[in-house]
Image (tube, rainbow, N blue to C red):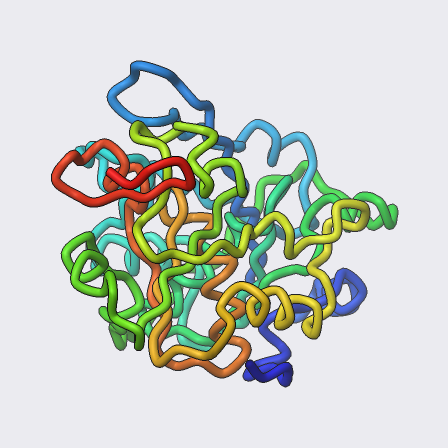
Length: 296
């Protein structure tokens, strides 16, 4: 697995952003979301926006993205299911994203919310987007400026060149089981992967999966990603060898975008995220599942 990055500018530093805050084509977005796990609910968790947190302090100029309200299907049995392309594109345009803009995405607590939006923009064919390395925590730790002002951008005009292959459903995942050319990558914590934590109904993972927890790709002290060579080594250690295709998954298609982001950065062209992931797969008794203790 290569260590040179396909698009180094897809990850920007806090210093770079501080120097470019006033670039006229720059569009900054706070992508933060919180999941509240609920046992016995119709979904594995409630999806809570962080609009109040954003209003209390954000990177100057940043607008807030509400993932569940504006970019997801309201009537889906799973949280954060991707809405139709025209709905998602319209939401991005309304927020100010257009063909001539440079987009910076950041989030709080986990980079996965920012990488989810990065992957959604890639799905629509928009590639001039970057994730802020270290997110809001690193920005605050460095005592950089914050604002409480509401931020808006002029409406954008986005030319959609859809890449439907970057998101897949359960049928495509099921068909890939046992195919040596496809590597299924679970981005959840090791306890869920091993079957020790039955968070998504039946404990375990999709059979044949390998585990690259997205949380282990981040420095817990700085909140920034580990150096690319360490992230590359984490994938090499888990996969053992390169595959032709990678499908990443997690609980609901969010954490999986961190792994997908890095696989794409390392030069792999055929990378997809399993939308709905274990929220869909776990409770479905018709689908196979595997755990260290047993295979169902």
